[in-house]
Image 1 (cartoon, rainbow, N blue to C red):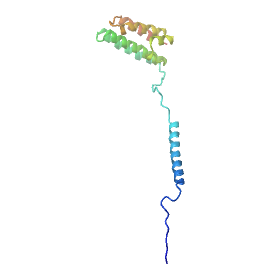
Image 2 (cartoon, one colour; image 1 turned 180 degrees about the vertical axis):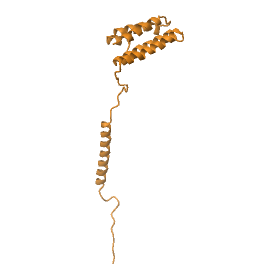
Image 3 (tube, helix red, strand yellow; image 1 turned 30 degrees about the vertical axis):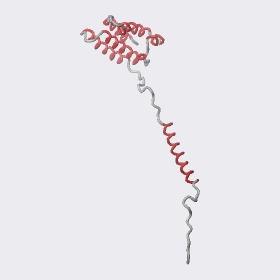
Image 4 (tube, one colour; image 1 turned 120 degrees about the vertical axis):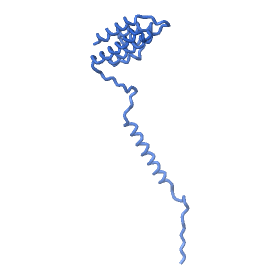
Length: 154
C-alpha cells in the first residue's frame, strides 16, 4: 500500500487574513492611546491657581516682611538698591495675593493700564534708586508709604 502525502509550499496560502488581523490589532491599540490622551486631565500652564485668602492674613504677612526689611535698612545690613528691589517685590506680591492680578510680571506701563494708580506711583518711586547707577533714595520714606498702602488696602 503506497501512500503519498503532498505537502503544500510554505507560503502557498493567502496572507490576507494575517494582514487584516494585524491591522485590527494596530487600530485597537491606536484607538486606546487616543482615548487615553483625550481623557487625560489637561495640565495647566500655571499650577499656582489663585485662591483668595483673608485680606487680614495677607496684610499681616506682608507687613511682617516690611518690618524685616526695615530692620535690615536700620542696621545698614542691606544696600539701598537691594532694599528697593525687595520693596518692589513685596508690594507686587501683596497686590497679587490680594487681587489675583499678576502684577509681579508687569511693567510700569502695564500697571498703569490696569488702573492701579497707587501701585503705579510706588513702583515709579522705586525705579530710580532701583535702576540708577548711583542708588539714592529715601528708603525709610518709601517703606512708610508702602506700609500705609498695605494697611489701608480693602
